[in-house]
Length: 342
Image (cartoon, rainbow, N blue to C red; front, side, top):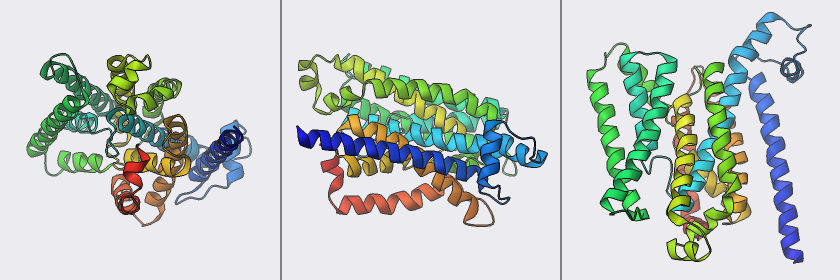
């Protein structure tokens, strides 16, 4: 009993530390950039006390830095939390938003939006719809192929097919795109980034991410039961098919909304959940909130590096891959991957 209380206390301290780190880096990321803004001025703008500040400082924070920092926080949270959920549902340490076609579907929708309209709103809307549609199609076809059972293996196999289908769609769209204008825009979007994020885009996706996060956090105890297998979870009173479908749908809503804003940013949904497990163990009731906070911190740091490492901005997808792959290999060599999901 005493050991459990000590673990709960340490978990509370860790959550508080991550929340404070999230707040500090959020403020720091608003101030950092080619034009440095003191932290005191950032706080004044956020509090609405702008009387003694120049109009240019207020404009930079309100129109550029604040939406970008907010997008980094919520995208990092969404991708990390959806990664935890997918890994729990499939009992697979490599599960991520693309396992059922969400990422490739969103990318295909965005590429089609760039080809047809090249409007920020259209691109974001089509990325979200196609990402969600890809997963709903996977769920439907897996039930048809599995004759109503919709087991994990059918979900994974159909998800691979749907993902490949939308990736081929991206290739077709790129083939017909204008090589001087549209094709570079599609390629840059696919590399991921937050350089062109606008306040309106963030305001659209934040409610979707928050609602989805609330559902996952409210049902985080069920994620542990899903990892035990269908029979064990059903014996404990969980409607396995319904719970799995809802977790997948809300995780997809969240990840599709995130991808629609920032493009494809890989490895966040794989690496951050494993970092959380290294900190708190395999219990998803603790992994999910820690990974959510850690994901926001992680992506804000990556975004700061993307802005400030070189004279030109580095796409986020490149940095997350450069950092994520060696880290993942390190924890793989340590033998933590399989133990972290048992």
